[in-house]
Amino acid sequence: MDRIERQIQIAAPVERVWAVLTEPAHLAQWLGQTAEVDLRPGGSATFGWTEYGTTRAVLERVEPPRFFSYRWNMVDEGPVEAGKTTLVEFTLAEDGGGTSLTVVETGFASLAVSEERQVKQHQDNTGGWKAELDELIEYVQRAA
Image (spheres, rainbow, N blue to C red):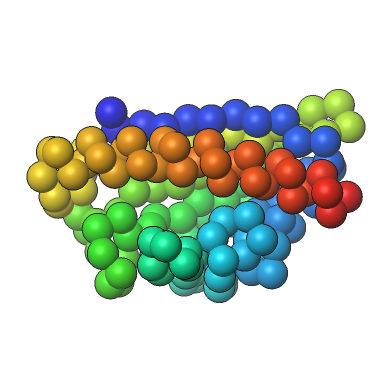
């Protein structure tokens, strides 16, 4: 209940997928409707959804074009603070002429909310990552 992991194959080169994962103009096409990203360790990011509001994040690691991670606030629209975040990690690898992308989100059990809300957040994000990553595949392949 503390981990979500999804691996997908994308028919596009690693550099293209990296751009779609990290550049705000691309993010706003598949991950919500708005995005801002300061792409450096310690940089801030925001992701906005019309129906869910805005989530703030802080980037942890940035290793272009193979890996990056951030902590995002899962509890409220406030700042990124201990007890409010999960860690999201993106790992990109060449796979033939395309890209293998692995997304892992952990830390639901450390959210400072009820166990019931932790479980619901995990369930919501499990479905959310499926939907968002399906949109990512469609967007990358359409734009290619």
